[in-house]
Image (cartoon, rainbow, N blue to C red):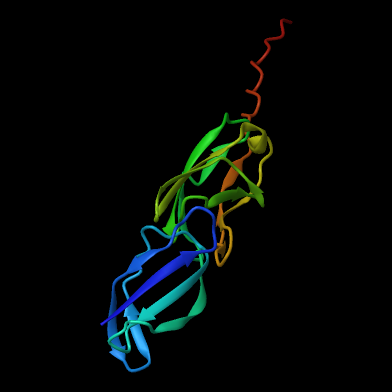
Length: 173
């Protein structure tokens, strides 16, 4: 029979008991669920009971839990006319976490976490004044994390119609 406990090196988590299973003479398997743990460094301390006095304790082992790298598979809408007001877009992908941020041409924009596969973000009107093809990415901070591949958002130029042909003028003789 064995028990283990963990201690977080980040200030928002406290250590607690883990459920462990004996795997081999030198290994234990733990059931450290991801639910209560944020990315950061952690130290695990396994305690074992090698004798009837229950005095044995193993060395601690440090490990880091990394944020996943985000992927961006689509955005909607994919365009807006130049001169548009603030525009909300939906970003679809994988491995989004609370704290993942949408970037518009490399600049962070207001982002809301919806789920691990969806974010929403607001492109400010000031970024929609000139026609072009800015890139949208998702950034997740470390440890781990990273920047997703990009999707293109098109800021469309305003198409002004051509002037109508002038009415014919009748000349009197």
